[in-house]
Image 1: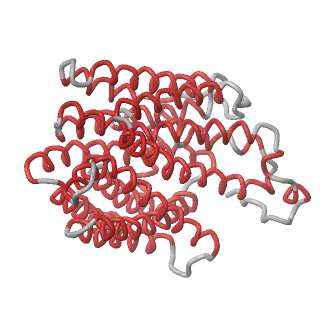
Image 2 (image 1 turned 180 degrees about the vertical axis):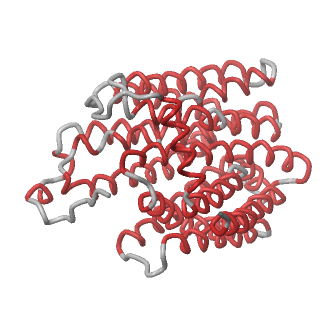
Length: 404
């Protein structure tokens, strides 16, 4: 297993991180692309609710935008590790999001519901490049002594997008309309496309091989390694519960007496909490092992979402959402640690993208289920569903860890 050099062990560690050739353009592209993606998750829900007043359709659109990655993620991850034509996938992701946003502006409220769902589907076909794709470009661009700092900057990219994207969609919807928020998302996607065209993308070192065989190997490794199996089961079901949030938050805001656009602040509060939780892990290594910390984090999410379900006011809901986000940050860090510890170096990227795809698939299914539940029973039942997914994930994860 490769060990990353500690800062200060090499002269390169003293060099400002963004002076590494190509790294500034990489982070500009990755952050702008993720910002557009995070804004789109909220903007398209607000647009559907504004024009159709249908929580079920909103849940279906969110589900459609995340479901394709269940299939495309493992294959894109393996392909990106081997192809000299990486830029095509990165550019295609931005073009797909741009076309989908423009299509939603034209179709939502005017075309049949299945057209709106298909446009949501288009958003998610190449979205795995936002997770494993950009991350895989870091190592060839920086000295070994700077890798830990570079991956820290990569985590910051996710958090900045997670904070700013939903807030941007919410603010634009409140000030103007959901249509303006979707249009701004399309513009962001275009700017990200221009940034992607400037990112250096070295050819991979890996020899070409059977794509299907490599994908099946990653799946087999996840299924046959008890720690990986346990954390994958638990976090996949946990993510299924989180899939309820894009549908629940706009209606919860209205239930609490404010405009649906305040859902952007709920999303941003969750992301700020996650950023704070991650920074806590970075500044002080916890004594609790990563596997146990992951299970504790999922248990904490169950309690936090239950508290939000009975929130009497928006400030109380925001406080509980912040706690949930603060638990999600260490949960993600612990999950990544478990995957690193129990995966061979030549398979690590495939393991990450495959596990991420399973989580995206669960997120999509959770969104669809939440849409039906919220339409029938209201947003608070959707939050109880999110809490229930956490509890089931812990139970099945513990069984997966012990079974042979």
